[in-house]
Length: 477
Image 1 (cartoon, one colour):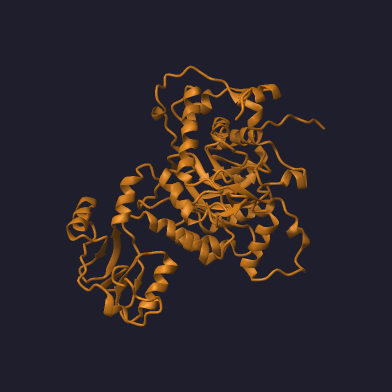
Image 2 (tube, helix red, strand yellow):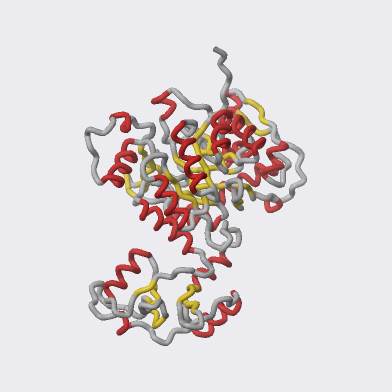
């Protein structure tokens, strides 16, 4: 049996090339997420329950990337996270939340809290607009207020017709000093809602990744067992742009059958699957019908697959091997795991990845789910692998409500750990640092784009001493 060498990011450097780039702004980070979806930056937030829910996904999309909502939720909860993302940046909210004039203010508070909105349209039984209820209308009212909505709502509502342009909308909002503009047809039926906040976000985030309706891009994960078909259908109906088949060992019969079943039922669904670490694995997923392949087995910071199973491929070699198949097939490769800094991200892209999925870098930020905790005077957030015992138990609890001791013990052989990561503040600053580093990496390779860097890239293997030389040395840091 021959044993070949496997390399990871610390084993190599990119050889600098002649560059005519005088500013990082001359580089272009636009890339393909999948066969038919493009991103403005090659960054994906991982589908992990301590990394990506709607808050993270919205922020990443505004920066030009995409977030993948994790699947350790009920179908309704995961769909709701997707809807929050889509509604966060719509120029026109197509199905605005509403309340009946006969409902109580307490009912309205409940809807506003559940949907995380600051106002509701008031519609009758025929979906005709009769008023609007905002936070100003219910100021100082108790949460259990029994008054009816019709008693406190604003009845004289400024409205607009479908087809209104952005400039007209801004003028109406400004002249009437309002924040919400319902869109109605000639019969007063509600057709949408425009808010001043959405217009502000449109201008504030010009690099945002958007769908054809101008809404933020968002993906969502599904498994390979149980309700995955029902979950996929619900997520697609909610407007999810890409479905991610999430399984630790993607080069498996379960994964391939899942891909085929989803593609057969939803042929227009953009589908990413993984994880794999070999050319053969990538090729089989591509043959099954995926639109992008996720690469990485055991490379994540909280993953112990290699320790528990003895299986895996060092990440750089895995990306290089899979990228050859991806390039030949026209299918993008996503490097998932092992990226600790912008240098690692640049190396993964140079090796053939179209984008980078990151978890630990984004864990610990304001936008990641979970509370900030204090330990020894320092702030942290929990970050865990999705194959960790706590994540697995949490998933089973959400799926069935209880954990049965008679369950297959193999389900509890953890391949991930739970850890604390330092609190890092806003993810926006981190994305700026990563993309800035990648842009500098492109310039060192004499490349204006990711594709050009892949064509120009030359790796050099380094020794342990070479790695030490690459770090800050001979100084106190």
